[in-house]
Image (tube, rainbow, N blue to C red):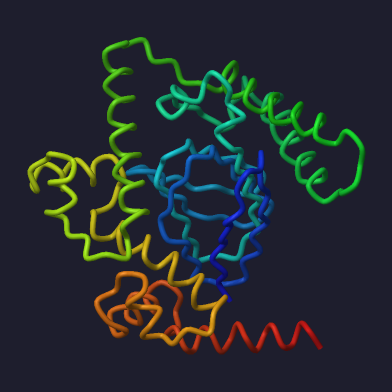
Length: 285
């Protein structure tokens, strides 16, 4: 069974999710957020697409995903991956420039000890997340978060000596971030490529190429994934009919929603809902 991790919590410094995947057809549609994210693979392997770049994460490896970067996960193998997201507010004065920086968490002969330290901080945050009612625990959480950010900035940042290239990259990141925010606010509406391009004063042809270049997917694919993310939540958390869920989240009709949902999750929406409800009943017994 494939579970799409959904987190609607706000106002927190960080969040930990542990994805146990036993499927040989796992796919988490592309998403983005303003938090930085670290993936720690405990077992198995997965392919992670960040923007237009493909990465494979294997056992004991760590992968960094910067804020506002569209990313998706797929795998034909079972895996266990821990995801740590850190709120952008924790970046302090680096909030504005962080999305334009690049970091490399691949293991080399020179950074082995740094990666061990990074893993220790991630796992300590996981342990702290499971504890409650402990006086002063937030101070230790702050230390771990600050140490992670410090390690990224001092040991894992990929230097960029071209200031003009850096400023250009930052400007593009800001534009993509604004486009994604626009989609997130309007995904339930008829949001055509032409209308969105016009909203940002671009020609349709230029906007289409620009969006694909900086996200690694077409505008239509990204919009459909955004709609699917919200529709999935409605499917498992509400009693709305499949048709109402489809129309509420911007799909043209229930058939279009069901076709795309099955392509991603392997079952049509009603079958998937029945499976989830059955598993919930079993776990409550």
